[in-house]
Image (cartoon, rainbow over the protein chains, first blue to last red):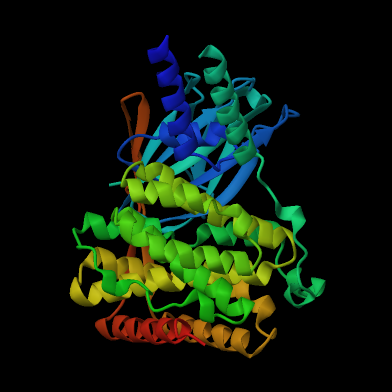
Amino acid sequence: MKKYISTILFLLYIGAVSFGQSTDPLVSNCVMNAGNNGKYMKDFRVQLGKSAGQTELRFKANMSLWKNTKYRFTMCNSQDSKGQLIMSIKDDGNKEILSSYDSKTGKTYPFIDFICQKSGIYQLNFDFTGGQQGSGVGVVSVIK
Amino acid sequence: MKGRIFILLLLLSAGLSCRNTSNKADQFVFPEADSVPVSEAEKLSPEAIADISKNISSPVEIANLLQMLEVPFSPNYIASSIDANKQSTNFDKALKMGILGADLGYLNMYEKTGSSLEILSSIRKLSEDIKVGQFFDFETIKRLSQNYSNLDSLLFLSIDSYTQIDNYLRENDRGQLSALIIIGVWIEGQYLATQVVTQFPDQMLIDRIGEQKIILNDLLMLLVPYCNLGPEYTELCSNLQTMKENYRDVKITYTQGDPISVEKDGGLVITQTETSVVEMTREQLNVIIETTKNIRNRLILNN
């Protein structure tokens, strides 16, 4: 019993020390799950209602990505989300560079490693599968 | 015994809950001098400004590149001469918060977390002075720094604090301070890259310096609405304009190609085959190095 309680206390302490300030455990858990060799850079918090039927991913943000850098994009969603968080990246010519969702097979990938060879400003697009409502976070890390 | 443990758990969980609801932003009243005429701030949409602030090259990316090139850490690049107690205007405070933020990123990436405590306390002082100290959990960041562990948490907390400050300032009509922090981060990152390149003239690093042309215009757009707010703003605008001029003849060209994707460990690995190519002469690079050094060193002088 004592051991069990000590473990709980220890875990609570680690939680407090590690992410004392974060207001959103979804973000902090996603950062921790982004992999050991990644270093956190940015996150995009996505909250969307059910789509009215549009096919384009609805949450859009711009971000500069730099040549000779390996980025990891990790997608996490809250348990009550109806769909899974997916993302795509388009370059400044609106050409799709990558997508975490394979529309042919319906498969979603929880993370994407992107080896960037062209510096520029890219458009990051997020949505939930099937245009469902959901809440999630996309974490961007750099990998050595 | 069980009762004591229960009370202990209750206190601990109460402590955690308090931390998570610690947004004390509405307790502060901001001085009139900080507000910017609406017409000035409206020159760029809030979404455009938010995008620009995300586009600025992160010090984490630059430090990551330096580590990839096996460039050793050097304390000489840090703006350790900044004395937070001697900054008299909000302009100086915000700009130096940006500069020190970039230094903090550099120290953290090299896991020189013990050395970051002095910088952390300067950032704390500056952020409290411009009334955004509530977004920085200094005690946790300090503890993580002292423990030499959990780098991810440390990076997350440090960067997330700056993101929250940036959002808060922009949402509260104090966009000029947000712009100054972002510009401070960029200038210090640029200083770091240009100083390192003089010692380690690696092509990848030279290219990264040349590629800054891509975001320089955005950076200027961020500051332009505030160029007439005072002489210090006007001078900073003029400095960035000079920098832009230095980049005028730097060329960036692109080659075409389709990305290659491979499944690995449950995820997807995408390798881009399209490339960007920087054409920058040694003379152009030298001018950029010199201008960056002059601007940055003038900015870190104490008042």
